[in-house]
Image (cartoon, rainbow, N blue to C red; front, side, top):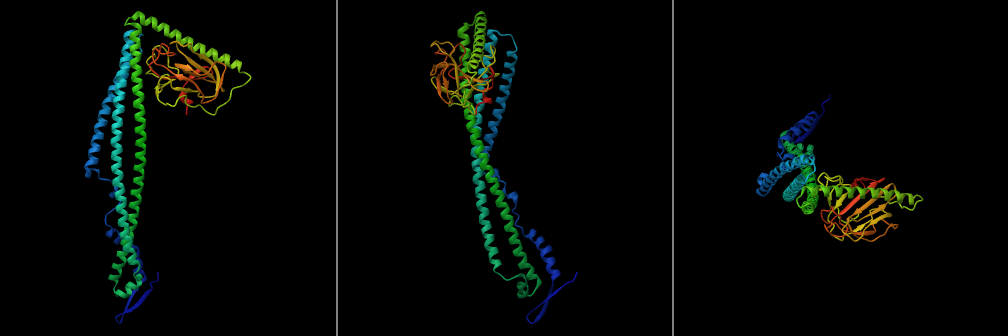
Length: 426
């Protein structure tokens, strides 16, 4: 390798420096110096030291306390679930069914306590995230100030002469290295602060997204709490009804059991036969096709799910529908899909009242516990049309023998067989 020599004159003396020396200085000495000059601030500084903030530490302690309570409640709920599972496998008798209903009530009370604690815990976590976001924003602002200071210093250096001019004017290699190293360190520091600030911003955005997620979770928990409260009320009604109907007598219970099973079997058979007859009548067409189902009520609360293992009357039959809560007596019910009115079973008594709509594609829907119909058989209804008012209040018109309070019993059937409505609802 050829080594070129630069000559310059200062104070009447001749000085020289090799290109090799400059190469070594720029490529080896500058990086080492840059590391030595680093102010020690790196990505580790962006971690929020919550121990230094008493308020944040207090919130975290409270969150841990709530989590411990929730863990304890989960164990208690598991015990009730195991007890209920064993009792369901035993022979149907009055004492056993009252025990199951009582255990369901106790389990739901624990569910309500859990949901309440989860809401309080989530509130604390949201407050803690808010503090973390404030800390993070302050760190971002501090980094911007540091970067501004560095940029001003770099700008001042940029207005100085070139490296070679500095070497010529200073007259010695040591001064040259000192000037060059200081500028290189400033540039490195600026680059480091840029990385730090970008990481801070990324963490800030992540925390803000987490905050929105926790708020959504909070809304879901509040809905769950409302659903559990309605289910609890329903379980208590079911237990009271059973005691009232049987007067605590086993013989009365067995008689009621046989009667209700027969009624349910008849209702299911009637619906299947009515649908077959309706489809024969409509064989030539006449059914419009909607792109999708809509909810039959404005409420989305579910008090009992399809084949719900916790359904209070499961010892009689599998629940073939969803029970939509949040529907006070007299809530408007809308057609979930356009269709043909195959049956309006309503006589103004306390007997079970329902509407059967037949749709295209082998589907049909059933709306149970109605308190007042607005349509008649052989009508055609369009999706979203109000077809009835809801009911379900025990002892009210259209409620039937088995009801746990105001709600809409909503079935979806495919070729006459009940299927999970939630697979069709948006």
